Amino acid sequence: MTISGTTRLFVVLGDPVGQVQSPGLLNPLFAELGVDAVLVPVHAPVPDLERIVAGLKCVGNLDGIFVTVPHKVAVTGLADRCSPMVTITGSANALRREADGRWYAENFDGTGFVAGLVAAGHDPKARQVALVGAGGAGSAIAAALLAAGAGRLAVCDPDTAKLTALQARLDAHWPGRTVVSAEPDTAGAEIAVNATPLGLRPDDPLPFRPDRLAPRSVVADIIMKPRETRLLREAAALGHDVHYGIHMLDGQLDSYRAFFGLG
Image (cartoon, rainbow, N blue to C red; front, side):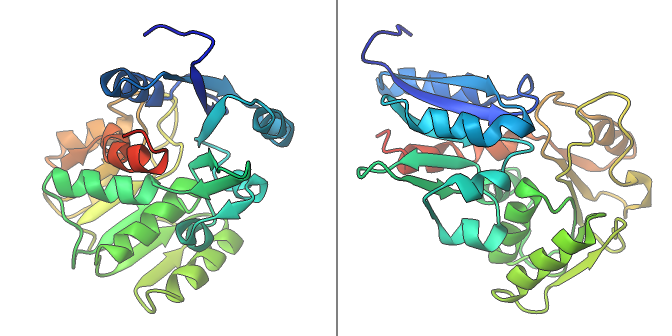
């Protein structure tokens, strides 16, 4: 890849940002498609997010902003327009500059996660799912699971106000299919998902106990680095099917191509 004065810019914002995997997938895609563009990571500390996004919007050759933890909720308030999925989930993971200069927010986390599940042979349709984490990614995954036909969806998050608000938005579209709790509710779950940051560090506690799941359950983590979190390692040792975080990003590549008009 050769970077020149004509190269278009994309950034991924996070705090921390060392774990992001999107540059390793998107930059080869740019090269494959012959697109003169580059995606670079930008460490955006939480207190500085608004100033950083405001500055990036002024960069004339910046075409897109990708967003990772913990900014997916906050960035929705910095976009000029939001998609229906962003409105439902209250979070976004991609913003693009429109022809009129305004910024449009979309969220592909949920659809990417479900696409990855289906590709791995774990279609959530009519299955009971436990989801831990109602933040930016978790909210998007919850909506996508319901849209894909998941039966009962149990969502857990200690932030009960956030959890209640999410349930209300989900019930407006898929009434009566979501239950919520402050503690993990994995009873009867055939698929259990960690959508929290727990696992980024080796000394993190488990988001839920895989030994309390039914035999041969699917245990999924959205953390991409490390690839094998403690949760997935312990789940595999118990004989559960494990589903790695990178599948969520792989499942979004086609959506990114269409969203940013990459060909």
